[in-house]
Image (tube, rainbow, N blue to C red; front, side, top):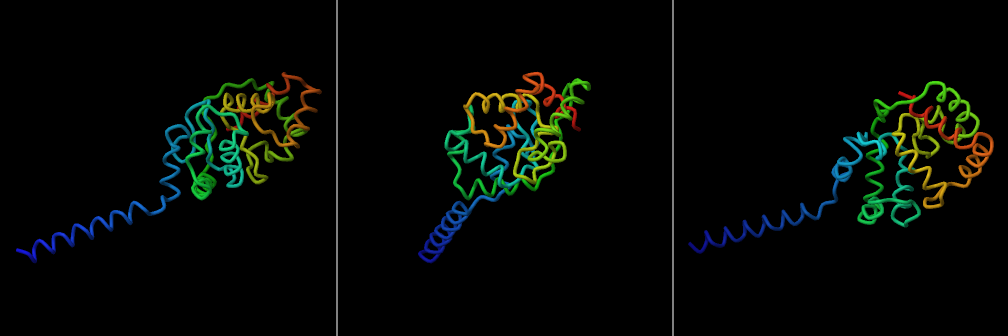
Length: 198
C-alpha cells in the first residue's frame, strides 16, 4: 500500500512539474497572432472597416507601430493598452507572423473611378517613393495602402495631421506639398485610388 501511495505521489508530482514546464513555454508566433484575430481577422486580414489588415506588412513596420502604441506616440482607443501587455520579444514574434501572411484587399469598398484616376497621379507624385507599387508594397517599411480599409486610412491620417499620432518627417513634408497643391480634395482622391485597388 505504501509503495502504491508513493508511486501515486511521484506520478502526480511529475505531472505537476510537466504542466508547469508547459505553462512556462514561450507562446508561438501563431498563438500570439491568434489573439489579434478578433479585430484584425484570420491571418491578419480584417473584416472591419475601422480596423486595418496586418497581413503582408513588413516586420519592421509592425514592430515600429506597436512601439508607437506602447509609448502613446500613436493615438488609439484600445491598442495602446494591448501593446503594453506584450514584451519586445512577443511583439517581434507577432510581427514575424503577420509579415509572412498574404495581404487580401478589403472587399466591397465604394470608390469613384474619376477621383481614383486623379488619386493615382497624386500617389505617383507624392507617395510612390515610400509606398511603392501604387501603395501595395511593404518593402520600404511603410504600411500597405492599396486595398486597405478606407475608414481606417482616414482615421489614421487625421490623427497624424492633428498631431495625435507620429508622422514621419518625409511624409509630413510630402503631405504638406500635396495639400498646398490639391487641398482636402486631393486627399479624398488618394483614398478613392487606394480603395480602387483589388
